[in-house]
Amino acid sequence: MVNNAQMAPKADRPYMPDDYGLPKTDDGLLPWSYVVERIAQAKNYWVCSVRPNGRPHAVPLWAAWVDGALYYDGGPTTIHNRNILSNPNVSVHLEDGTQAIIFEGVTSPVSKPDRALAERVAEAYRTKYADLGYAPKADQWDTGGLYVIKPTRALAWTKFPTDCTRWTFES
Image (cartoon, rainbow, N blue to C red; front, side):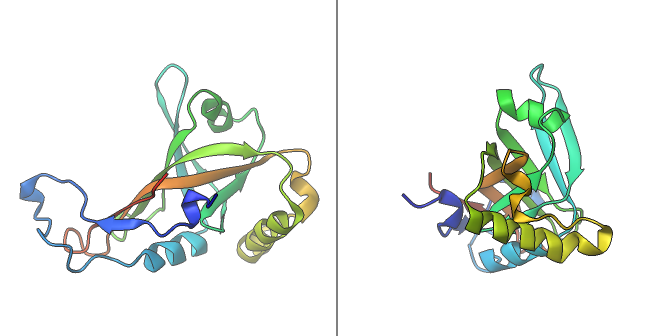
């Protein structure tokens, strides 16, 4: 079975009210490769989860985009990791609202990742964060602490509303 994050997502226009001026055709959609490049290069990701009582929670995280999914690490007692136990649906966005990248997905803990995946995630982290003092080794997550967000839908634009694009992933 192929992971939905590795399948090519379907691109189209998102729904928005008519007065937003969204083009009526799919001409000028952004390529998915643009989104992947921006997500992979970003250093800060805002992850939004929902508390069991329904209140929202947002937190900036460091993460690594590997194999079509976003991996982050942290303790199981953090608010966002406790939240996903009752509701694994999250949204993620980068810090730029003018050239926006937003995606929704489902997150879950990764029990001991296979060595090849752990190496790719650790290398992606070291590439981005070693100069900031964080350089994990692949065995760091052997007893837990690694989480993955698999995207289900994404939205991006660089010239709102002209190139506003939505991607959906088949499940």
